[in-house]
Image (cartoon, rainbow, N blue to C red; front, side, top):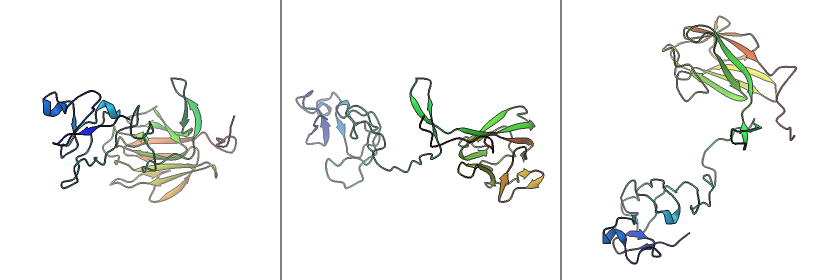
Length: 221
């Protein structure tokens, strides 16, 4: 990483490219780490991510608390997550190949919800290992945004690989969910062929994983 120099007014610039501060000289290619929200780190540091401002009263030359995204010449040598950043890593995954031929981690499908009556009749939705969230909000794994009677997140369907068992749990919201014609108020074991009523629509649950088949998470082949 190239060393930057700070001028008397607090601007940083690359001395190998400029004999004096280009901002003060009028070229505008230096960076100030003062209270300028949205300043950018120059190419010498290898980042193009906006930086947060330094708090008022911080010492001259203090760096913002937002580090650049990893890349060539970046602070972290290319690792965007150098330490624990709060991102949850899925436990039950298998190796797959993406469209570019790269090996990637995949949450395997273990079942489906199929709309049998309602606005999306005939459409299927994949259920994954771990917890699959269902609701009208875009953040859910299964997005049912065609019915305003469906809450933002209304249902969680879980599959426990170790127990080879499915469960359904009410996730909140104004309107109730029916499971086999009864209100789902807590958590219930889910069986192949069970029927949900979510909003105005009906969905049948179909299990891929059962007594005859389940994903082997320890397979190294």
